[in-house]
Length: 151
Image (cartoon, rainbow, N blue to C red; front, side, top):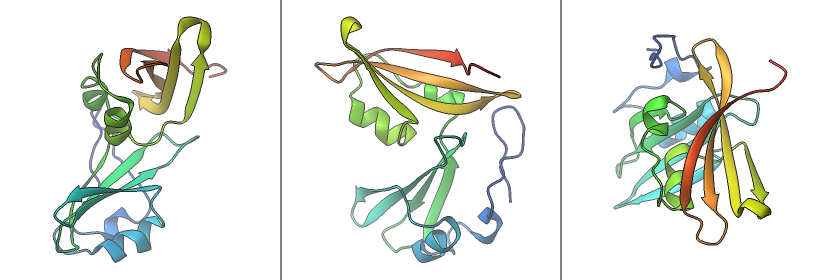
């Protein structure tokens, strides 16, 4: 029941094997994963439960719950395919909705930038994906990747 990441490595999270798409309820998800960090209302009774495993974790899980209250799907969102969709001009809210809560937020006033980062696994090492926002407009200026110092 474990999925694989883009590198073919098994994605394991304790308890995911207890959840079944189309069968498990929101209560089942909360029973396995705990209290979500954020609940996103998707309209018509559907919602998404967000479970960031940071600041030290390398995964953020999104669980889609249908209007009927059953689990539709779940995915780990800190992956290259999602990073590739972040484009200049996107709003901070759009990025937050796609990637979940950032590990850290730092302002560089002289550069007029606010940088959000997410820790993720790249092949066999942890890295940071950074999104640089214009402080005034809260829109994406650019993205970057960085090594984690000390590793």
